[in-house]
Image (cartoon, rainbow, N blue to C red; front, side, top):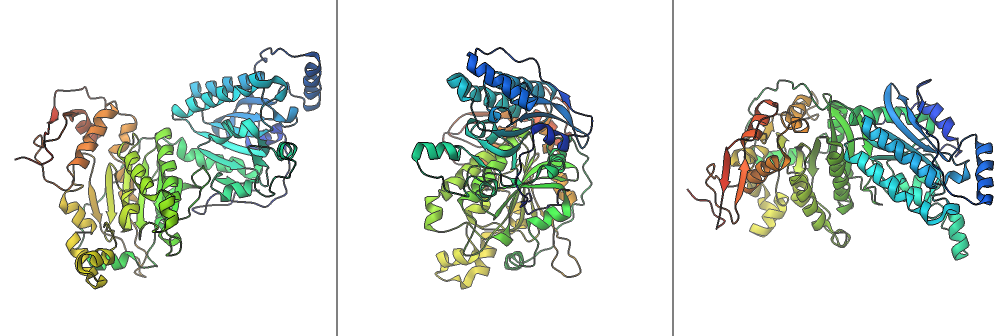
Length: 568
């Protein structure tokens, strides 16, 4: 059946009856007709006793395969993809030395040829007959997968029924995108082993694909018939060209609006949020699910998407999913950090969308490490190698908003605002009453126009805050940041992906921008407690025209500060 069109609600979860198709049947379903080319080479020799040799011979006769894994390449909707897969019909898909060597060789070949990799598992884990040597092969396979990902190449995983043991605990859990067969048994310890060890049945319903999806461990649950369409949509983003044409954007000034009016407009329940932004401005949207580590929070949307052809990882605070009883919590920020890692690994621009009334204020949030997650989000964004764009779409209240703010370029809707607390909270602190919230909003300079005027994120190379007038539909509610503005924000920073200026130089420019936030310091004239030399010439050239390699020159900002104050 065709894959349902899913824009922002996550990958589809189905309820079909579980089955166990062979790996060959799966490849026939997923790969374009006649395009599969096997990479399998003769197996390495492994010492076996007579009884196990007979067992292997019977498995080969029954399955028609020479091992529990097969490898190769094929086209999926016309896209070249490397494939590795387990056949459960061959000794329960167990992985021994020969199977591991075949897998690693295929992964290394995919890396060398620059191909995305699809792994489809159905295995009980390590091959017990080969003992500890087979057990250690999971390290070797994981190392090859990690090297493939380090090369910036996509790794997609489809977990079939059943996937347990060392396979699930290694290469089955390393995917950039991980999905599973409906009702598949998936877990670290197989239920039969648990029962033998503990003389009790394992809790029913835990080791199912659907439950693991609810827990944020899987991105989706779909039948094999929908897999090809999903792979095509994912690779449309992950393998998209990194260069893009930049549309012309009119630099029209935003009208002067009272700060409190911006605050109240941003709280309008009919005002569109991140899902409307994706619906109107993005294509090839593929929503991912949770942290991948056992948590999920619907208030943070993580997706792969393209804006005007430009691929990106998107992190969006979903105002519609945040309520007084269920506000944005630590799990949402851990999901955000998963998105940051994806952007880093895949060399994709990262877009963050800020629209939150504030983070959870509760014992659970404190025990869940909310403050630490805000700090770690800031640290990871500040040091991102991938290009970053932050969109202040609506409310920007407190640390939850700050956690997604640092970026190479910050753009804001006209009525977007940023404040350490909601204006009512700031008023309660300063005036002992919330009645002066409108006054506090004006005095604190929360508007996007105030942020730009204050110089905290002034225009400097590839960084700016732009307060953007918001187009309005006839009903007066459909306000959205134009797609052209989001695409233009990628330029020139997206050219980092192919520019030759060293990353430390680009990072130092960003550090200087952050260090001088809120103060006016002449170029080359601010003092710092440590010495720092920042190369600007290559970065300026990249920022100006995206340009080609620019040799390291003698132009520096020299920074030395025995004290923390600016000097004239």
